[in-house]
Image (cartoon, rainbow over all chains, first blue to last red; front, side, top):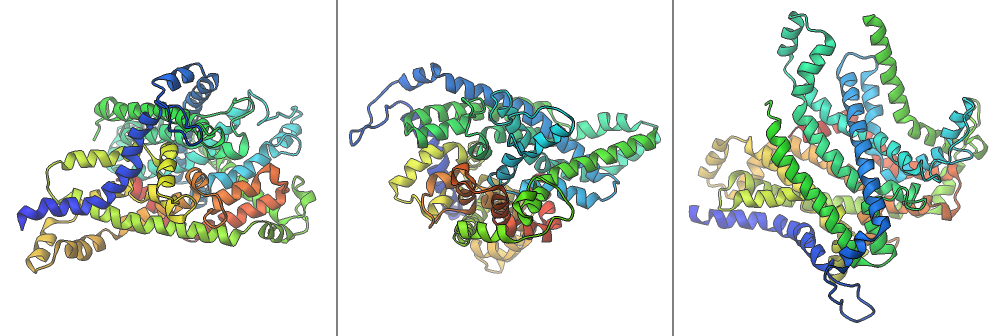
Length: 290
Length: 269
């Protein structure tokens, strides 16, 4: 009976493991394999290309632009949405009038499909009749061609992303805040520590594990969330707002070069694995307040 | 001074809340008023329901919604079964290589199916499942997040409960079904809500694998409906958007406390 236990364990794991293998592990490996071939022409089999696709990638300005955009996109949206999320959580966790209504307002964007709300944002951004330019007009400022200007297209996407993400990250901070031990705060208050001091020296360090968790998820999202590009900019104008995953999609399903798309996917995979190593290796070891 | 900062902070909180809900409020405004009021805000503007009728007639929303429900349901059902079995094995059954298997599972938290659309599309066309409900669901059916969540929960169940049930002659699957699953109800609820809202809103992968009305979910339908090329005007797009997000939004508003708590619960693990 006992001896069969390992067999049972494997049998119970099998369905989930098979699916994970089929749609995560094996594709991650075949991506590398396919990146070494030229795209198939007609019925001919794919021809081995060696590292040609990678050479092409290094010479591809659009790739560098998308990568650069994506790094800026992460660099702006991640801290901005995290700071907002923390502020929201502190507000909603404190004694504020209309607390549950506020919490609902902050959280609602999380529940709405990106693609549907992008339609509404598209209207906000539209040059002649859009809401943003109307508001600017009240102050006598000339309207901006938000999505059509190479300087403004990416920031416009960032703004919408921050709006979409902050409320989601708030939830994690809120959960952590509610699990904090009140006693330490009472003690600190007895010692006469100021609000700001308590926040900086108690709350912030105690929230460190949550911050790490949110940080990793936020960076992941910065590379995986491209839904709004399909509605707002399609990566344009002139690739000014193109992001890596969207460029992968374009190559595979608009330009029909699945092999070059695979090459780009390898880069994305490498970055994510680097992120994972960073999380488990460096950051996890430095943050151990618990 | 302290009261002043407090008032300032409260106003900031409310301003932010207002900004956050603004797109939704605007969609309500635009879709319920005649087109000429789309950018003119007048408290006494007449109400109309025509945009909803136009939107409804312009796209097969019923079909899209049915597809979304089928896909979401299919994914959730498989997720619950697969993650329960795997979560239990990883929590309570010692076997060689458990740590390695767990690490392999967790890898999916980083390498999400969204990243692998190109290869997964290849796989699906190989097994001839492009443009099917099951095809949209397949890459998501084994979820690392679900396995992880259930493993953590099962680990908190006292081992004695299992031992007693086993002594009474209960089989392993029997114990799982009668002891573990009932005790993990809050986790199932939390995971279920998170999963439903995620897949109801998912876009990229469904866009890639569906190409006809028969399998296209709401999100993909919305993208086609709202595309500038389709020449639909703003109020109608807003109305369509509201139709698309309506069911989920209604459920969310009704059970918002549950939703928020579930997301928090899932986030704490």
